[in-house]
Length: 255
Image (cartoon, rainbow, N blue to C red; front, side, top):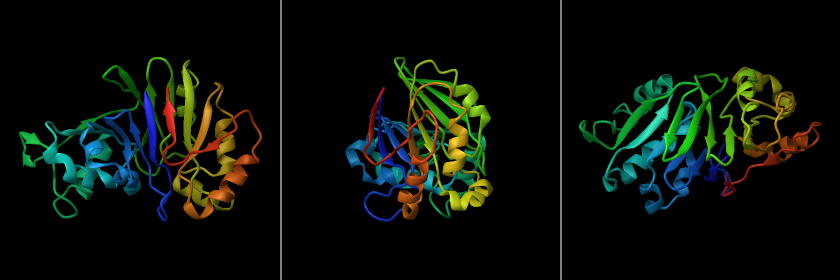
């Protein structure tokens, strides 16, 4: 499998700051933040599957523009996989005919451009021989992470999350774990905000990574654009086995 980072920032501003979105092989998105907009029209047309971690705007906003741009160019609907609560939020707050059209009935309910598929924590989906496992997350809204397993090796993505023992219980059982992408949204001076918003700061990241018992290459995502240097400096000062690196746009993982 091949994962290309389209966006991994906690905000926008400048050519390098795009919100969370990963292209998996040529036909799958993991979240659909602003980074999706950098794909060409032919690239967008090939996407059949979108796995969403949660309903927050920085992870879903490009679904609307994506479907509007390529729906008529595709032979079948794109499928959005998400928790039932996330799907309900998308229907109520985005694809509601007020903010954006409901593409599950366009051009017709029988032949739409968009369809939803509910998932739950623990589900394992087989997409063309690729295993996608839904992982637990702890956030201010119902949320999940995902494990991508090629059979040879795997990549785990926390999604947006605070401290999450259930995640580590699953990840520590993954024998072929190669990569871990984990969020750190705030610097240590804003630990209180991180706790309230159920995100991580470097101190909390260190506490979480201490729960990881398997070797893996660890990468940090979701940093605030104005505090990248400060937050990474605090992360570099952490002690422990893992030595996290900074995730960046167009970073490619092969596994």
